[in-house]
Length: 94
Image (cartoon, rainbow, N blue to C red; front, side, top):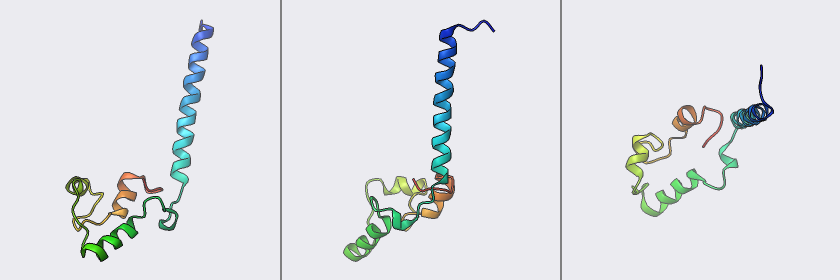
């Protein structure tokens, strides 16, 4: 095939990067996150606190945008089912 040593090294490096990316994607899809595992952003707790403090979930500067892309439902609550199904391949929440 008349490949140079440099071309073979570049092809090997490219292949290794592709395998690493594919492995990371497969591993991410295999993760099943449950609400109890999320402590860095506890959306349910934030919604509860807004309800007790303000009587509703207040609009923010980005609420209309988040509603337009359906991350938030029209009532302002996080639409976890939509995000899981349409934005996170169903297997993990991001």
